[in-house]
Length: 261
Image (tube, helix red, strand yellow):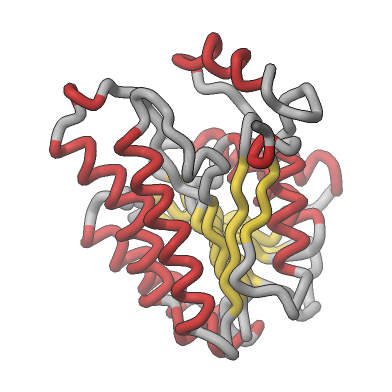
């Protein structure tokens, strides 16, 4: 695992809330990291391959605010037990968590999303989806629990509005996201009262390259009649982090799609 230190210029000398966001180089993760940075958080931006994109987030922050962001990029392959252990150890031992009383937010945003006909789903694909969407959130939450308890922090699982619906070619994906959703609900009970746990369920936000036609068809059934923005999801995360009496909740950011006939 590689750690790229970027600075603590924004909010220097002040007590800060500290967050770890997995998969924070692009899309929803990037928007969430940018929002929390703008609110004065110290953010660990986890990436696997999106190192350039993460550095761009920090450069954009510097260009806008004139100071370096309070952030550090952590590069790790979440499919590697060794690199997960290294990621956990890096955060546990980091001076910023000791200085600020622990880890205030753990956002399980890392995800994989590909369509494959059921007959062609390999065991490797099934296991990788379960690994990223269930095992990794379990392991990270477990490993970082002392810091979360110390800060009375909040864990957020990025689930999916499509859970509970039948979607052709996505059985491996929706099943694993349903597992993440249930894990988060269970942990909301297991970790109370020290740690809160919630979920955000994005709907039609940003189309993957392979699903443009399907994405447009989904928009036809969205009551608000349009796609959402990644910033909409980031604001839902921020709301949950700032709401100390909310736990065990799922906020669907989907323009009403989850209640559409």
